[in-house]
Length: 242
Image (cartoon, rainbow, N blue to C red; front, side):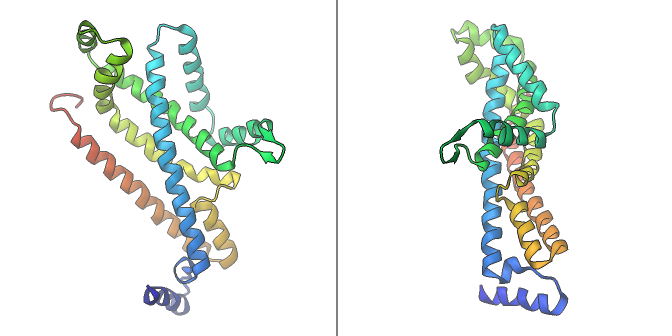
């Protein structure tokens, strides 16, 4: 790999394209750590937001009015306020209340995961609710006639069918979530944008690092979209959902 690093050093000397993340070990290390932090944030938030969406959609069909009301106002609060404001609320608002003797009990990374997961989860609830409502009522009645409880019918019959219907909209929301992870920069989470800003402050290569960020996020989103489309084709039921 040393030949590759030397080539990027030569590129800087010859053209001024200063990609220190390749030929400088320190910059390379911190950019790699930022990239993997972005990947971890994205994966954890995607998983958590999907779980929130599934649970929230089930509660929306509950007979308990209080539970439905809580979910309703959760959706309204997180869909109709900026995600950056939500992030500040969790980190500076709730974070100030949850403190131990030695300092905060919850780290900035954890607050970013909580905030972004709840933000995307609010949209996922509505996405899954629409998918559930698209499942024919006769299918649910058939499950109930076989002795399934409401939860069993939801998990084994309704949700698998609703998931197929919801995948296109879910794909769009998860792509938006990956892009929204850049907001974690605001509370000093060392993700890709945060470490890039440190690098361009030290090396004065702002345009180059901006282009690197663009390419990296394009690749991350491209991998997610490709995987989701492959999954959508793999679980498609002929004649159902499209």
